[in-house]
Length: 216
Image (cartoon, rainbow, N blue to C red; front, side, top):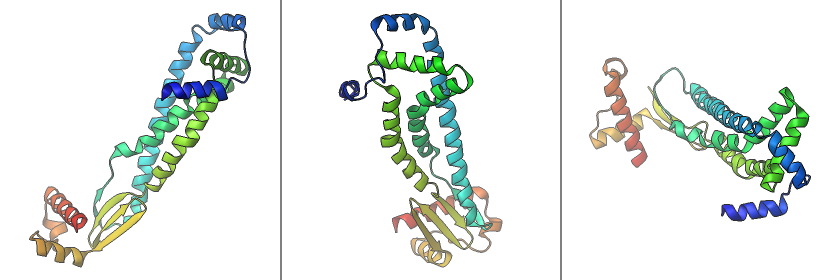
């Protein structure tokens, strides 16, 4: 599959300008050490961009849960791993462009442009255009799905349990839960539950309630 992609890229996404073998040989010597600096810079861009974006997504997920109100006694969050997909793909797709733009902004724009042209000729295709298509076709749909998942969480409140799933919010009232747990033989949450029950016991009972609610 990768070989097919490379063949298609070399056929339809050719470099913006062709360099002769003599020019490429000269640039090989000029960028012999620069290519390692560029490679390390791209890795740093991927790490920083992915980490910052992941942190923002987790923060937004927590922030949207503030609407549950002050009576919330327990929050259950989705796994943090789901917030890594979009930052990871987007960082890989944009790392080359971000590196070139930073180089042009804080370094030598002409050198950055020449390095891109040399790199594209050595690869046989326009890498920047390929990564832009990757961002559009792969990263953007993942980003849309990630944004729609931002409200996901479960809140256990005194009067009900609020389950916010993927584009779905389900609230089960306390009296329904009491009838459900009484039927299944699980201790219902009494008024003294929030005051007398230990934190560990409280969480265990809440988890049992959530499992029963999902099964029903």
